[in-house]
Amino acid sequence: MSFFEAKNISIRFGGIRALELVNFDVKKGEVFSIIGPNGAGKTTIFNCINRYYDLDEGAFIFNEKDISRVRPHVVANLGIARTFQNIELFRRMTVVDNLLLGRHRRRRSNLFAEALFTGFVRKQEIENREKAEDIIDFLDLQAYRDQIIENLPYGVQKTVEIGRALAMEPELLLLDEPSSGMTLEETEELSFWITDIKEELGITILMVEHNMKFIKEISDRTMAMSFGEVITQGTTAEVLEHPEVLKAYLGEEDAFTEN
Amino acid sequence: MNLLNEILQTILSGISVGCIYGLIALGFVMIFKATEVINFAQGELMMVGAFIAFSLISFFHLSYWTTLLLTTLIMALFGMIIERVVLRPLVGQPIFSLVMVTIGMMIFFKSVVSMIPFWGTDTYGFGTPFTEKLVRYNEIIVSWEHLSIIILTLLLILALFIFFRFTKMGVAMRATSQNQLAAVYMGISVNRVFSLTWVISAILGGFAGILLSPITFVHMNMGLIGLKAMPAAILGGFYSIPGAVVGGLIIGVTESLAGAYLPIGWKDVAAWIILILVLVIRPYGLFGTELKKKV
Image (cartoon, rainbow over the protein chains, first blue to last red):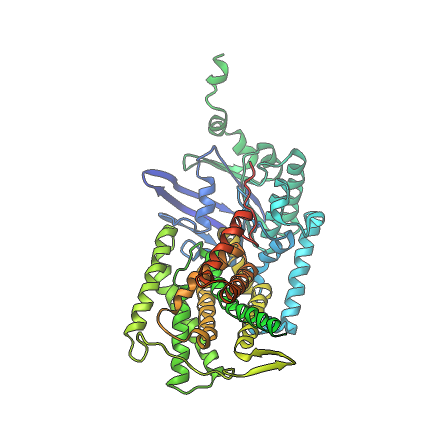
């Protein structure tokens, strides 16, 4: 049994087949990337996993459980965290508050105990804050700890979003174009972090990405898509060399030779 | 000394009425922050709360404090039912439809109250432990009725503050109002957040009803006071919880002073004049923040 599996997933929007019988599986502890031109259906896969859309056919199996019919917020509670292509942070809160919100699913609640701040609540609060501080150290966010998200540069916001996902202590982390909009140095730093997330924290990563150099560096296996269908999948090196992939990315070979 | 005492009295009664405006405005703000809907039935929630309290005291002969507690529970349930039955099926519909539905509820609640036997269109009152009791400090005389409103409002706001600041669901509600999508992906159930929003708004309405009853009595049109709480909410910026309370106080005090020292008629327009003045100077309200879009 694999760790995470997409089985024959399909979804249509009106007449458009956004995903057509897509199959892939992600092994525990690896980085698995999905590449493809715009409109290939990469982010749609994420949105289906997160139950933003209903699948027309097929299922996602996570830890041997079918998660394609659960309610949206349950996906997070099962241990799947996510970041977004266009940052979705709590913009008027501080960095540390955003990270603490990532702890929501780990927080047990009892209104009266919370209002009275009893020993159990206090202990839980300390744990959550320690975890948030660990993440701040891990991602080098000390300088921004108490700043409001709105005022932070784009690259830092992207990092905070990864931090918030890590605060959830997920088993599977979905990263939607983590390197987009980041500077060269930020991207390099990011590839270190992702490797650390995989190796030190043991979190499996499923990633949508455009930056080929970045994928070459950190992705164990890759799947290429075009117009809602899988072109090929396998080890990253194989996929990046595949003629269909080259064609989808660079156009017909003649396009270069003609001139 | 007499004049000072008089002004003090006027301001104090302004503050106590302002507290009630503030509570209703809080109800507006709560629902607006969570769902971007202006709940026009907020004043009617207050009216229903007042009728429930009146019935518990007059027909069931319960004590004031038991009534306060029971009304809170009944209103909580009422808010939950409204959200579940009326609003949840409309999730995903345009905001405009939702606003229309709240206007519908406003009319519906009024009509139903007017049809219920022993409620109807008459005006009722009920006694509270504070009726006709005074606090004397040298020359200054303050009625307990007004003081009780202020103290109970403060306690309620303190409870709300603790809830939003420290509890899991309170924090979840704040997060949801900032980014619904992200909240869902943190494992927050938005349905539960919306439900709780209506529960809290209904409780606020009920509380306001109980507190207001000794002053204006209980009748089916008492919800119209919601129209005065609206400028209070706008004054505060419509997004801000402290703003709603401060807005309520400003409107209450102005109205009370205008009523005492200006010709008849000014009392009713005072709130609106203040609102227009503030909006000219700070279009985003006293506590609102300017929405800037980075280009």
